[in-house]
Length: 199
Image (cartoon, rainbow, N blue to C red):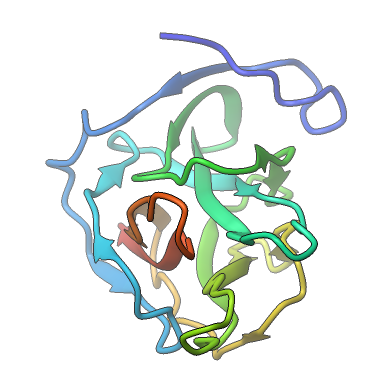
């Protein structure tokens, strides 16, 4: 177990944060949220789930900054912060697979004890044989407490349509489509994501 710094402006007191990993993959989900515009490269990786009774109330992204003519990978990971009800003093994180590049941004939170309920993915189209593919570049979430949160990724590509919404509870699981490291060739890393809803 380890704690992670979440920044003093996000929560009044610094919570204890534990990595959930694959410890709770037996939790039953009620639906899976998808979008039609994900990138084509890579393979779907493993599922990670919040513990029973916990739902994703915040998120951060791992983003590689503009490489200015070198190989850009942009969005490399999505981390969800799982909380229980209105209590955000003890959190679990889930992220499935992550790429090698970039830094994690500070978390963003649903206000008023809300949970993430739907998402939208910003994706750059395939750039052709001599182009630099980045695929997924940013993500937006809607909260059950109504606000929309946007990641701090670049503005390359376009947002597609919104996913369906979790009808009860909220987002409780994640799996990503990730291109493996290309050993000096064109890396696109994270291409697509699916989120699980729990009642």
